[in-house]
Image (cartoon, rainbow, N blue to C red; front, top):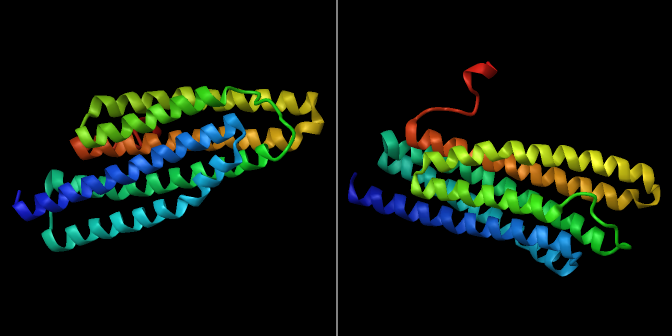
Length: 220
């Protein structure tokens, strides 16, 4: 690999690390804002969404510039393609964290309603998936990426269980319907974050092996 290309790829990796750290922080704070009914933390998450958007644009421009100027091939090209796709997933995760924070802000400004499901545990598993997917990217660890993909089923089941519990709570406590619907949104957004995290893991496997696993043969 030419030295100038290596420098550009190293810089790109650092940019992705920086953006992923910010996104991970946003998800954590959004969950805290919900669990602690803290409007100020929610506002912090919402305000930082623009920084994630700018980071996504910068990384995309860097990827396109590297491809145009250096014409990378093989694993280097797969890395850049993976970063382009992962970059988009990170931006969407940032949007979802902001959406969770907006619901946390609403919940903080109404009479307390207990969450019908374990927000902290669902958030913890989602954050664990996100952290491992990004670690698998930086380390080129396909086994860790597969672990992330397998965890997605756990979050899907937690989301279905949250829906069932919230539906029952709405019937039993119709006066709390607004707050319960906000909690439903929280669960749904955490499930979507897990989906995007799974996308990242799938792109890591593509980067390492060149194999596209997003649509297995059995699904065709």
